[in-house]
Amino acid sequence: MLTSHELIGFMSPALSNDILSFIFESDKQGYRATMAAVAEAKRVRPVFLERQPRAERHASMVAALSKPNLETAAAALIRAWLVQKQTPMLIAFLDALGIKHDKGVVEDLPGAVDDAKLKAAVETLLAKFPHETVAVYLNAFNDMNAAGWPNLKTLLENDARLQLGNHA
Image 1 (spheres, rainbow, N blue to C red):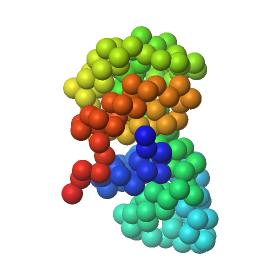
Image 2 (image 1 turned 180 degrees about the vertical axis):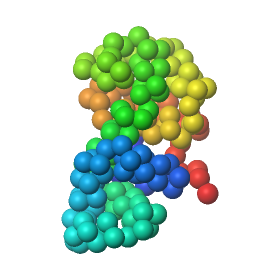
Image 3 (image 1 turned 90 degrees about the vertical axis):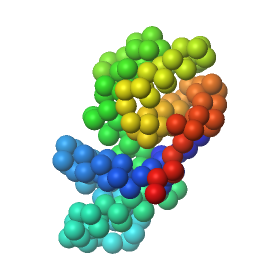
Image 4 (image 1 turned 120 degrees about the vertical axis):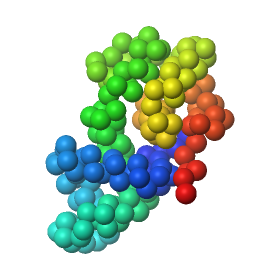
């Protein structure tokens, strides 16, 4: 099971840049909070990062966010991207599992889910969405939720389509 900072480190540069670019465009407050956390970790002022060209800034931010000391910032960034941009995927997964939600957000998760239902839900996601995006979502879902379904952990560890870090 991967933590948020590990997800940032293992995902492709294209996806990590997409996440930061999306948050930059749609959630200025979240972007500034992420940039402030990175600046603090790097022991620079946020304005130092702001003055860098965006591509260079994002590469620097990804490098920092992939470190354990920025787990909280990485988790907030991934969570915001998932809830704001990947809502259709969240909804598809929860609907396939028959879990009540509000636009992909769940208050109380069941302690366990049926293996067959889970496998069908994962197959639904893999058929509709990019595999890397699905892998990030399912890993984040498993890491950020207290339910910690053992069958989801097993799928994440054993299904090659859900592995990160296979980019060039």
